[in-house]
Amino acid sequence: MASITIKDMSVSYNKGKSFVLDNLSLDIKNGEFCVFLGPSGCGKSTAMHCIAGLLHPMSGEIRFGEEVMTSANRKGRDKTFVPPQERNIAMVFQEYALYPNMTVRENMSFALKTKKVAKEEIAKRVDYMAKMLSIEQLMDRRPAELSGGQRQRVALGRALVRDPQVFLLDEPLGNLDAKLRDQVRYELKKIQEQLGITTIYVTHDQTEAMTMADHIVLLKDGHIMQQGTPEEMYDHPANEFVAGFLGTPQINIFFCEVKGNILDAGSFKLNIPEHLRTCLVPYAGKKINLGIRPSDLELAKDKMDVIKGHVESIEPLGDAYLIYVRVGEQIVVFKYTGEHAPKEKELLLTPNMAKLHLFDALTEKRINR
Ligand SMILES: Nc1ncnc2c1ncn2[C@@H]1O[C@H](COP(=O)(O)OP(=O)(O)O)[C@@H](O)[C@H]1O
Ligand SMILES: [Mg+2]
Image 1 (cartoon, rainbow, N blue to C red):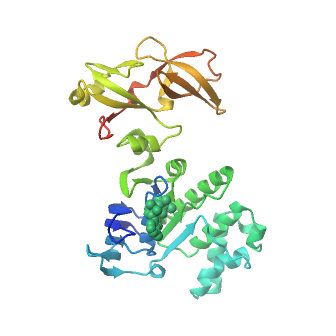
Image 2 (cartoon, helix red, strand yellow):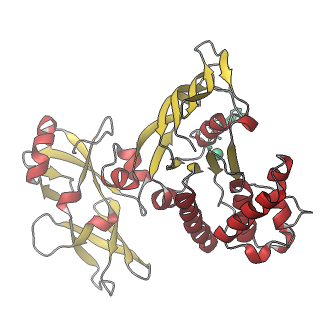
Image 3 (tube, rainbow, N blue to C red):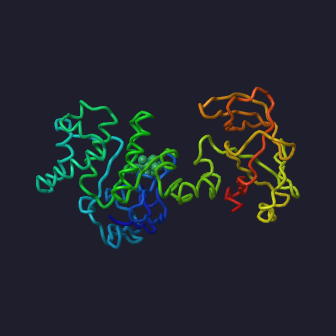
């Protein structure tokens, strides 16, 4: 097991004309479940392939613990490069391939056999992992006789029996249906905690990231937008991109003007609460973007800080309702947790003033702490 340190890593597919990863630096703690999150094409797989040793970065350094795996100087010449098979990593991808003519047990034993591990030891490790993954009753079946979720668990088991120091997963649950995905997600997290293997999990799905990660690294165009625990990033998004990427349904954004102690969104006005006044002093008379999460709105109890809107549609979620409300020109999403959906067509909403997110209109960076 190992920590992973990445320093100033850059990757280009066109000899430096443009960079897919640009001076990426990152520390992943020993035993951590780290999620690389971001939209398609932001460089998640590329970063993971560099860590696996499948790809040479143009420059930068990757260490597992103290051991240098890859180190290239600015001219792109490798000073050190440990090949993938010597890095003691295990990988699982979305298109994992089990050996079709082998049983589950043979599939899971294969890598250890080729490493000439003793028979009893192989059986012990395979049985242990099968138990962890609840696939003990499937050991004599072939992949064709398994469901998608079972096959995926075998693929995870096959990777984990090797007792890797780093576990790399690239969108491994993408092929599963929603219910199975939840289940395997839960099991994977549990096993990772028990084994304590440093894990990097690549996904574009914010729910997977929020539910599994100890540490999220949110990427966009090869740059880290923010990293931290799921709670930190959800409660204090560093910029509008992060605010929009984490949380479902998406945060509502309003363009506002700071007028004295009033935030004026045109269609409604809010009194700027005490704790936000200092950080807004430099914005007097200027525009800012105000973020309010759908779950941070509620039905107004008095006439202060009211957002008036017209109900356009209501989606029942079972334990809550998503109510789409037209406010001025804008559709605002309101997550209502009352037992019955409101009958009125006109709603008066009020935000939780402690949970307002303020962003600079130009830089989109967070203003309030
Ligand atoms: N072999 C390649 N040659 C050229 N460009 C590539 C190659 N692989 C990936 N890219 C480009 O690099 C960027 C990042 O890709 P990738 O790391 O696969 O993104 P992600 O996994 O986040 O979806 C994308 O713009 C992609 O088109
Ligand atoms: Mg990818």
